Amino acid sequence: QSVLTQPPSVSGAPGQRVTISCTGNSSNIGEGHDVQWYQQLPGTAPKLLIFGNSNRPSGVPDRFSASKSDTSASLAITGLQAEDEADYYCLSFGIRLSVWVFGGGTKLTVL
Amino acid sequence: QVTLKESGPVLVKPTETLTLTCTVSGFSLSTAGMGVSWIRQPPGKALEWLAHIFSGDEKSYSTSLKTRLTISKDTSKSQVVLTMTNVDPVDTATYYCARVSRSGYYPFYYYFGMDVWGQGTTVTVSS
Image (cartoon, rainbow over all chains, first blue to last red; front, side, top):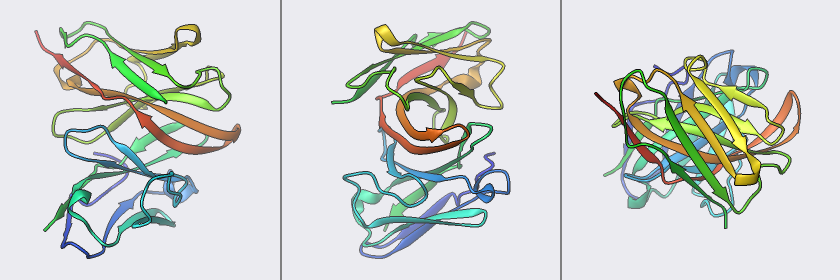
């Protein structure tokens, strides 16, 4: 059981907006530590979607956005597309401890 | 082009030591701020971060596995090696390595995420 809690699943119809939450505690997100988000399409290696809480690497569509507040973070996907169907993971860490941890993952189903 | 490739045994017996190698290209392990992480994923389960090593040889380990893991690098060979002792069937997983970069200085690092991943190598622990 991860210290970062994500909903096991979310779903939405094409074109809709969905959000995925990532709830931590005062030892990780709540201590001001950054959050990253990863997308894992079926049968493939994960892909970096967001770093530094809300920054998209080059090539990631602006349909993907993220934010952080207090002890939680969220990933939003707008204009949902069939190819967005994947597992999504948040990650955070402790700067002093340098220990990273993933959330339990959320399966996004596009209806 | 930045690439990473994992290699290691497909099958390991319980109690043995697992040694995995990540061979990188397109960047140098000695470049300031560059590092490599290891992550694993048991079948049908979530990702689990295991360890990382940075250019200055700074190493960090998962809290739950730190007594069993050792990470090291050979810059001349562009390789990062992860060893896991006393393996158990629960260690059966796909093991990934990924490039990670950061800026700043201890303890105020800014991480740019794990931006390039290897394809993963599947390891089964069974007698």
